[in-house]
Image (cartoon, rainbow, N blue to C red; front, side, top):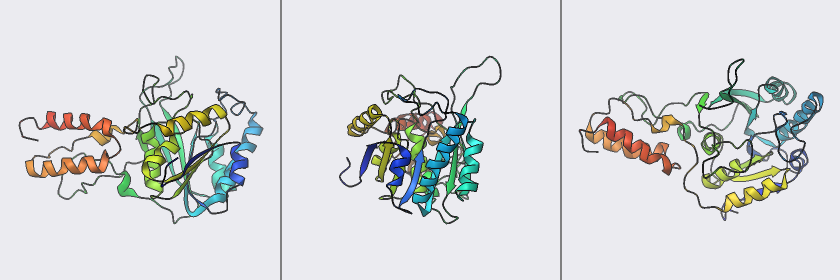
Length: 299
């Protein structure tokens, strides 16, 4: 539990727990519900009939839409089998406003011999109204080139995001089949909420949303049906923080044509503050790239 910002994981059914929340009380929802692909989450939540899964999706999104503030945003991960139905439910049934269809690109995935191997997941971003929170400066990515006419604070990251999976060999890997990278969730939280805001994850899983909110000084409430994952999340929240477990490769990019040594030194410090603030484990790689690119000059 964070002393200044309430980080709480509660056991229970997402729909029932959402019903306990007040109307228009939540700033941001970030969640990764079951895709109905028969994955083993320790219960039958991912093995519904088509009809039952649609009813389930309609029920939880109705409650999620109700609790969002007028300036609120929801991000939902979804597999390809049901994402078109989810889109329609969010837009037509819940009257939310479509903002983005985000493609999370990862470099490794399931291998296939017939058809193309999947290398991405989809994330729908909807808002309660057209007046919503979006902190662009908080999520910019480094420019490709240094130009005086460019905004060197960075560019809009776009709607295709590259983050590696959390591999089983990583120290932060939890005993959960669909753990999402912290850097991926970080971008959503930074973009669509402010410090002290209330974030909810109705399907908390391995606790990534709560862990990220804990470090970014947001309040976060998570619901999780599996009691084992609740305990796993509590343990994860109690562990020391040493930087998020994933980084967009663009964040380590050194702009080309950064030739003036004085400007370069100032930019390098800004780069670390702007893009690698919560990524201590990525700073060494960035400094190596600077050294390789400008090895003749004193950095």
